[in-house]
Amino acid sequence: MNLHFATSNPNKLRELSELLEHQLESFPLDLQEIQTTDLQELVKNKLQQAYEHIQAPVIVEDTSLYFEAWNELPGPLVKWFLQNLGLAGMVSALYGFDDKSAHAVCCLGFTNDGESMHLFEGKVKGSIVEGRGSINFGWDAIFQPAGHQQTFGEMTPEEKHRLSPRGKAAAKFKHFLTRKAKQT
Image 1 (tube, one colour):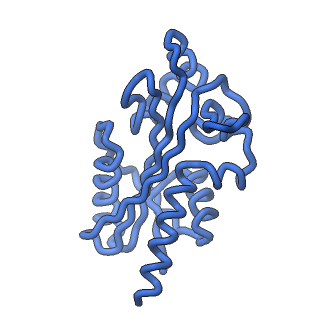
Image 2: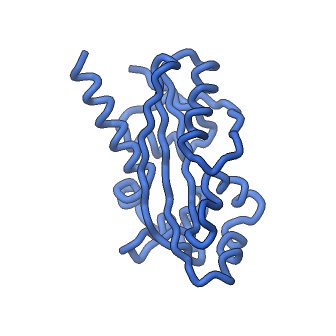
């Protein structure tokens, strides 16, 4: 099955293709992102827009980062926080808070007909730390998963794949695709 991934982010395309062990077809779309802290609502909206453009099986994805001290923020709005504050600014913004714990959530959405929408979530608890490691992919350098001494930015791709919220969501999606293939 040809799977289209509505993304213009080459890092997301590479990572999800590796995780699914399937070369996804990138379909760069500038999807409107509704302003919400509800990640599933955001992904459903993006999925609907993507299917309207592509008219073929399509995947969308969004990853959120939640600072416990800030309740539901930055959440799905993390992209805008990164663009405006940068990694160091995000860490500094937590300076006055004792609680540096955070959790990351990835929601992967898939539809093959534009009607039925399937969502797959992966979640990882951790904490926000001073930036360490690669700064080439979002907030990886400031997120240290619970029980580990390295940030995602310091890990090898294989280590990150096993632990990341995208890796967990992709594993659920892969299981769904395998089960669906056995039914046909």
